[in-house]
Image (tube, rainbow, N blue to C red; front, side):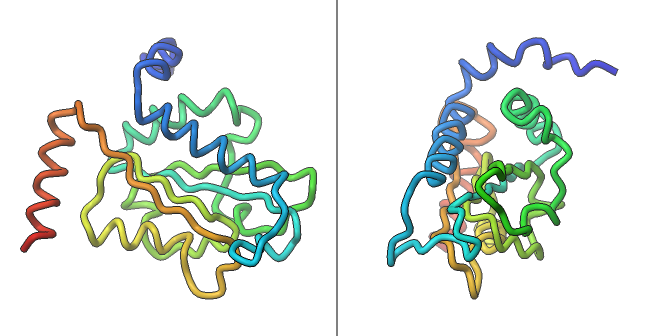
Length: 170
């Protein structure tokens, strides 16, 4: 069965500020391959400086669209499973991106080798903390980045953002 949006990937990628921001974070993640370890960020214990990312959404349709947009970059590696994110890397290893929803992968996972958590839709405060904890936990050697991308042009997302701001004030 063909997913109807698949043929519109290029248009969606060009018109989506969130996807463009995700691409910037993906490029930043990949750039670490050539960086030298520092005291602030000694990198993973395997010495490769290869980083991985988890990208979380509220619903499956958003996850599918994000997968669809990234598939060109990771077409031959689309079968990534959680266990492979924690395996040691060597210089030939590729950066990996896990795309999922908050309900499926936003809690409980220990992703020791991942250090990026990009939240494509603003979560609740509790879910944001849980999602960020997937990559930022005790014994984490790699400097972590937890990023929430907020779409200021989507009215539904704006309503969610305002509701969250009100909850934070309470």
